[in-house]
Image 1: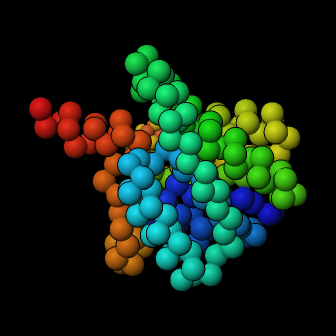
Image 2 (image 1 turned 90 degrees about the vertical axis):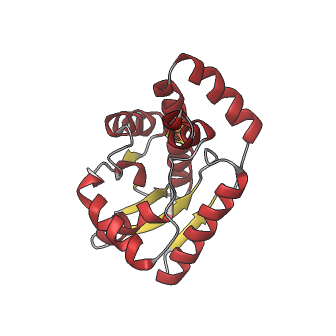
Length: 181
Ligand code: SF4
């Protein structure tokens, strides 16, 4: 099956790519306007590029970074709940991935957001399914959490940059500020 695999970052790409490419034709897609600040975005993008070039992966990048628009929507939703903000963030990235996969004539799309246990796994799965129906392309679901330890180990062994928070400034505050007060 030809699958467009959305990658949220290099460490989360490692084991999913390795395992999925054993039985599928995988192209990796970068689209992550949720990563802030911009310097952090560039750092994760640079790590992603170094890794994918090293192992010879087919890559498509969407480098759009609508910061004001993203923060405006995320701020409004954040005031209501973090869950709504993450829902918007997942849907934004998955919709873009599904559209790209459809435009390229692929069979399916999926995402490395299904890897980390700290992501809202059931929400990612549900949004992927509903976007698949809207766009008219299959969402390839696999519970990638079984590969999380393997991906962590691969990232440690490769010595690549491993970020300390999910991506947006809200998650950065949760990680480094709120816990310390
Ligand atoms: S915490 Fe992570 S998933 Fe949720 S909005 Fe921020 S970057 Fe997106």
